[in-house]
Length: 187
Image (tube, rainbow, N blue to C red; front, side, top):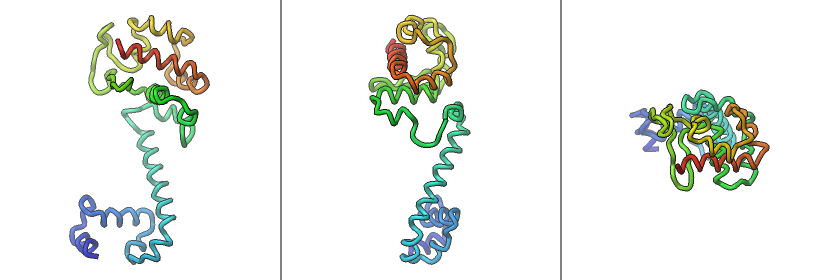
């Protein structure tokens, strides 16, 4: 009760979890729960509050992901809500990480305990051909042609969206893509 009293005198939600809770309950339409401060009412409403709050968080997360400027192709690759196919197939962690990074066209790639930056956070030129470095560039860089020929010979010049669709049905392609990327990363 003391914290509620102090929070009402200094109503900055940044510094008061009471005010944060009050705002959340008001947004969810459960302002009466906060106002009455009754254990019985809290017990009765708790499952509905948690359910509605979880739903709001998922919706907000989806809105942020769809409008992301960092991963701008997210809206193109999201085909259904819920767990993505590669997380349900019991694949080794290295393949799951690779598939996720390819699907998101992440310019920072994790491989064997090391992070490799392909120009996501700074403008950087490829040390082999001089063109602007990016995750997509590793597929077109002439210096990587031998790796591409070795691991991805069946892959013509396809869009990343098409590549990610193929990954879903071809485990060998997933493995070869991983070997291609790790070979390039370890140069």
